[in-house]
Image 1 (cartoon, helix red, strand yellow):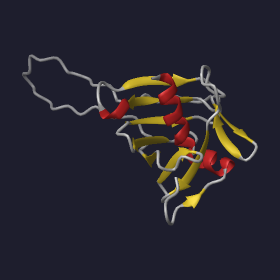
Image 2: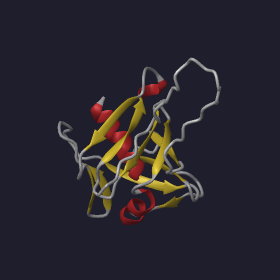
Image 3: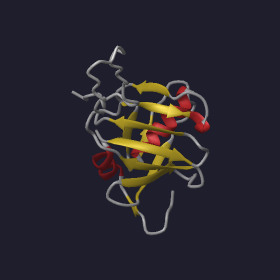
Image 4: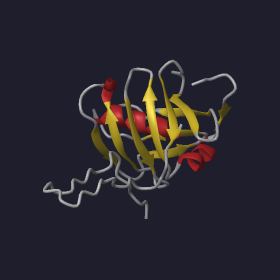
Length: 158
């Protein structure tokens, strides 16, 4: 599960699609770093997460669209530029996958493991503001106010 999330999260940073702009690693990192993205993958995996400028990742993932979403955090240095590629360094994985990123518009991109464009995820930028609590005021309510936490936790890189 951890390795799968790491690969999906790494794809956040990085599938060929007609009309898309292929981003070199430095440009991809600048376009993506610190922003919240929701993602949907071709296999049904979905979630939302944030990649930080130090190469760490935090977010929720629901594998193949089934089961409960899980919150996962990957440490600093997990994602890094190696030569002309953006790659993931994952303990326990016998290779370092590198990624392709194609910006599809000002808010979105499609990412895939380099050379495997058929296995991709589409990412859409989401609002960075924290979720707000919506309540209905009842002057004589005996029920306590319920607060529901946001699905994705925010995290500062610094």
